[in-house]
Image (cartoon, rainbow, N blue to C red; front, side, top):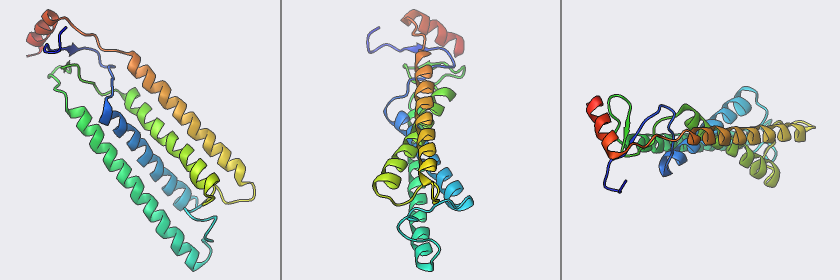
Length: 195
């Protein structure tokens, strides 16, 4: 099939993320992972704040510094989420789709497994990066500020690695369900049926 001809894809599981769409899915995972970390661990459970290992949150000054740092962390999570949504939306709306759901011009279709895989990769990557950079290299805080903090840090890091692996698995599975590419004649017949 030459580059000037139309390509029609069939199958509800087709998923071939390109550029911005894939980056958007990962950014959604980063942003949502940041929100869950901040809301659950910082606010509800109060296991740590962004600077709790270097600024004691039990003092007024320390609580102020940690609250500002937590707010900046949430602003970054919001930015990642919004940017992820924009990239996914742009990537998903670039290719025309017929009324029957047939994707024209070889565009990618939405796939629950694929977008969940990208999101898990972003969230797991966020967890691992947070552990390595904020917990271990910079020593800003630990998953839970207790005497045996290393156990909590290692479990949190293992959870991040498991999420990364699950994300890779889901994305690989979604990509293996390749679209059926039709010949030009089959594409014309398919277009007549859906029009």
